[in-house]
Image 1 (cartoon, rainbow, N blue to C red):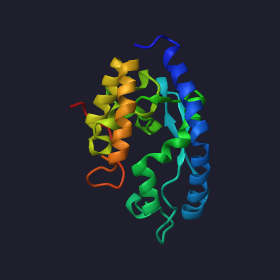
Image 2 (image 1 turned 180 degrees about the vertical axis):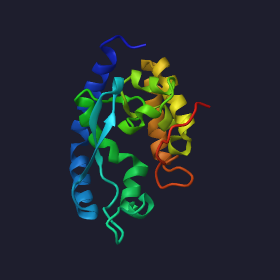
Image 3 (image 1 turned 60 degrees about the vertical axis):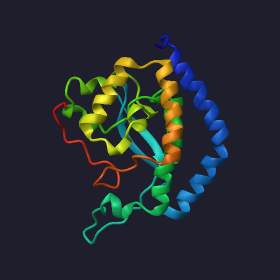
Image 4 (image 1 turned 180 degrees about the horizontal axis):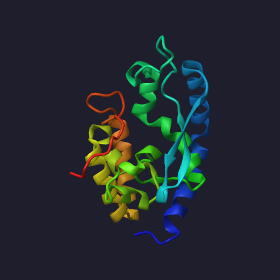
Length: 203
């Protein structure tokens, strides 16, 4: 287990170091996103953090704004360009979330922050995923990612919340590197990304 101040200290120091090292890459990616996908460069969306608090998640955008004749956005699969798919498969689209870590809204490791609209749909056990800070990577991301269904993902989030430790986080970070290099579990079987959570009983 972590000391009360341990996880936050590790997150802060690591995020500062990674941000400094990755600054040229961040600048280059921002320029590429602007050229290939237009503005805004960042995708900003309200998500749910620890204890149900909301915050604005920041990522590089990976989809264009293509719409149909009625002005509605096209499905994800049609708006996800090859460049956007590459950003997702390499997970570099997540780098701007380091700002959320520096602000204390996220951790390097934890359950992925989901949409506030999902809050009333969780079972009591599933809701324990919010007992810990959300993360840029997490147990789900290294044990199946979007290839898992919602029941499996939320069960693993809840397990992590009960069992988090420094040793477990180091293992998840190591596994994250391997998963990113192999580009495993980027999409669900029938979706370009992951379908929305409609609220399901625990398995």
